[in-house]
Length: 389
Image (cartoon, rainbow, N blue to C red; front, side):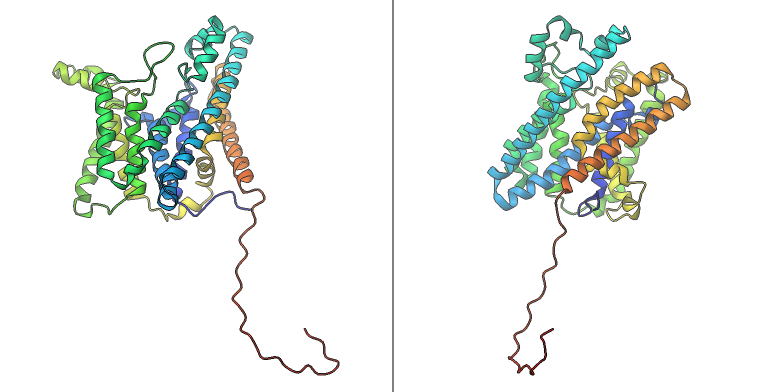
């Protein structure tokens, strides 16, 4: 029984699995593997990759259901998925809070609670649990699934507009601009609104859904110009990462308004620079990697593809494992220890994805080929003593 579903675009699964790996390494402070994450080379990180590909996959799955069975059935599937993610988030919250709390007590590290914003759980535990159920209390590391839940509920409402991509894109862009201009956000118990603003991040999800539901033809006439623009965006991201933010004195002579614009690239509100960066990278990847690329069916890509095809359990496991990895590297931050943590984490994430794949395929039998009907033959006389084969 194969663990990988091959009747789909494996590029989506591969890069979603890669994003999950980056989420694991990015949550381990001072991990040398974190230096290879996308966040060090572009003005975006694994979150943008995850949300864009979630929208792309949603456009294929739920858009396909809408075509066949109508909006009501498709919206019901979206709401059911949002409910599944909500339950997973609550489970993740309880287990992760216990993990951090026990570690902070055993190691006498109250700063863990401070850093992950779990200190209020000790001050007002009953209120914290209630606010967590309402998604108004989101400790660090636990703010991606609530974002996804709200975006899915938004998507369920506007899904019929997938049939008119310009209208849906204009509506989504209007909400994005209004949220950034007027600081629209959902309330947070600890103040300041949600870390990931759903009203801005929905634009990335909707763009992914539109690209998959109504892909259209690639703009061949201007493809080279788009290639050049995308490359310039990537170069700009490298300049920001390795120049401006490391050596801000390099832009000290620029006008103050330009400096403020360059230094205020926020993640919470999906700054336009981050949005343009992930779109440029997506264009270049789509241009350079064919969906039929042979390496996508090789052993190197398979661990990421398995993880990407079962992203929810792998994501939840990555949060637990990243904190365990942090404890291990803080006890011994040597290169050998960090390498062991990364290797153990990678194998564990693959194992979670493999088990999820096995369960999803369990009990399913391969389709039985349909035999062509046999043409009727006239009855023949059977000789005495001869048996029918």
